[in-house]
Amino acid sequence: MRSVLRVSFFVLGLLVGAVSADEAPIVHSVEAIGVTVGDLDRSVDFYTRILGFEKVSEKEHAGAAFERMQGVFGARARVATLKLGRETLELTQYLAPEGRPMPADTRGNDRWFQHIAIAVRDMDEAYAHLRRHKVRHGSSGPQTLPDWNPAAGGIKAFYFKDVDGHFLEVIWFPRGKGDPRWQEPTEKLFLGIDHTAIAVADTEASLKFYRDALGLERKGESENWGDEQEHLNLIHGARLRITLLKAKEGPGIELLEYLAPGDGRPYPADSRANDLWHWQVRLRAEDAAAAAKRARAAGTWVSPGAVDLPDATRAALVRDPDGHALLLEQSGETR
Image (cartoon, one colour):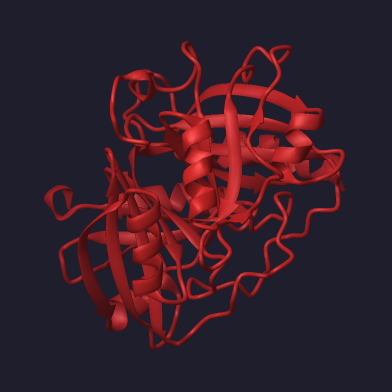
């Protein structure tokens, strides 16, 4: 079956075609990363009080256009926009209809796994701060990745959970790794969102979607294993192929393919945007309808194509080959 899928994606690559160097990118930027929460006020308090985010706005959305875009009939939702450094996090609570909670036994190799990685000035201080606030561990403790791994050696990381059980990561980069702005002198402990990471079944299939269909650029790759990686993910025998993708602007999208163990569960086929395991990455595109058509060739639509919203935005919600959601958005200025 795996060989048949690879042949299929090779043919798909010929049909869709990679975005050439002199072609305008389909996606210009990663505008925001969003997640569905159970109680907006509780989540806003967690992210602002503990992690240093600033709440900049809150809106309530309802109506036919919003329902079509999100694929949830009768939807009414509160959305809070938070900022940390240059990056944006959007928290959405569905007042109606309510979705399902995060599965308590979620692990990093389950395909619905996704998190944001928050860059920090000092890992020891960040971990002590999180311990004081009694966050739930997603790792056994902070891990320093070994020097034998040239791409990741010296990076320090720790997984933990928010109030709904969503995984989060704090990450510290040594000089020469990561965005140089994470090295700039500052008194702030939490600096910004470096990337969002998603579990994928097959990196090559995901590259057909993110790189070839949407035009994101592959910026780095590594293969990680060993005691530190196992304790970071809390998965015995974890061995990962990690691929970083970037748009021209905004945080990265990191593909996590578990080469071992191979017991990760697929993204639930009946998932909807009101379920609490739902994350969505908002991408700005020159033409939302054209971007949705390209995405459909390698993924699936949630919206019935591009939807015109009351604020003059045009947007389409799509899913990648593993089920992760992306909101392709075109501003009214370019419509």
